[in-house]
Amino acid sequence: MLRPSLLILALCLILTACSQGGKDGKSSDKNASAGANAERTLQVTNEDYVVIQNSALASGPVITGSIQPERKADLRAEVSAIVMQVLKENGEAVKRGDLLVRLDDTSFRDQLASADQGARAAQQTLDQAERQLERLKTLRASGMTSMQALEDAEIRRNNSQSELVAAKARSVAARQQLQRTEIRAPFDGIVSERKVSNGDTAQIGKEIMKVIDPSSLRFQGLISTDMVTAVKAGQAVSFRINGYDQQFVGKVRRVDPAANATTRQVEVLVDFIGKEQPRVSGLYAEGRIEAATTQVLTIINSAIARDGDKTYVWAIQDGLLKKQVVALGERDVRRGDYAILSGLKNGDKVVRQPLSTFKDGLKVEMAASAGVNKATASAAPAPATVATATAAVANASAASASNAATATVAGK
Image (tube, rainbow, N blue to C red; front, side):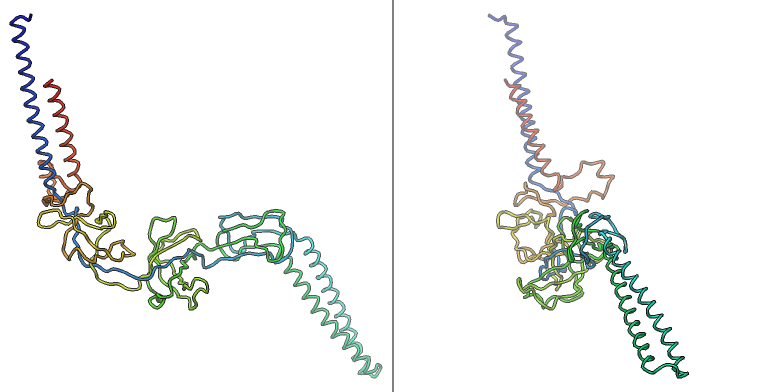
């Protein structure tokens, strides 16, 4: 049996704990109420919303194709020989006249030596025939030879001249064949593909190496035939290239006058504008030709939210946050903005980057921008903006739950 003093002490402790639990419960209720108030009011700055207004929207046919160099050379063997040496590899830069591949030239050197020797022999024969003709002309003037002998000498001289011309032509052909055993770069560029290795047999027409000029890249695209009348030289083109995150800008150089016999599409050649150009050929590209420009209401892509097949935005109307369903049109190829067909009007304000925690009918208050009144902002607590509203509610809920747990433990 407890003594009266101990019983009184136990009762005091129980009453103290219950009193603390009641205070903690009130504190928890206050925190929850503060969180609810923070959720019911949303403060936004000028940077948190955009104003819907008319903008220029570029439209036109879609163009798809690849990036190809204007200057490219498929180097092929012009003589049949064994590949003796390959001096350049894929990706190496070359200058005009650089030796790329050397073929076996043994037989061609022998042919050149033989042709040169034949040309020298023909030259000697011609010289001898001319001297003989001059002697007969002198004898004929003094009546010591016949006219027939003189004519025969002229015929021999003419035949020697013809033989000399033919011998020189054979010499030139043999020298050209010898030069063809050395495959050289036709212009400054880069080796894009090597087709042979040492020891391969290079037949006439065999592909040896490909050289491209990376500074001459262009967009070779295709468009549908029903849009060919809307495309003209000089129109701007915006397109993206696989492997590059940026958007490229070009200009239509020409439209092919003949459609592809298989796909019935028309080729359009587009030159790059500016210094931003890819350094790799053969990449897939897709874009749009800016054939026309219209003034329509537009909205940025980040302000658009989607729920299934519905598209909506969070509009600020009469101090409240409204979930507004909108219908979108074409997308601008330059900026990525969408045309607004219905749902919004000129001058409406929409949240720039909506959050998933927004609720329809939430009260909105305008707050000063981050860069305005820095002295006031440092002295007073900053207002809750779109970016911090959800965090404030979460913190308030967490504090309320923590206080409730503390009160329960204390009560026990």
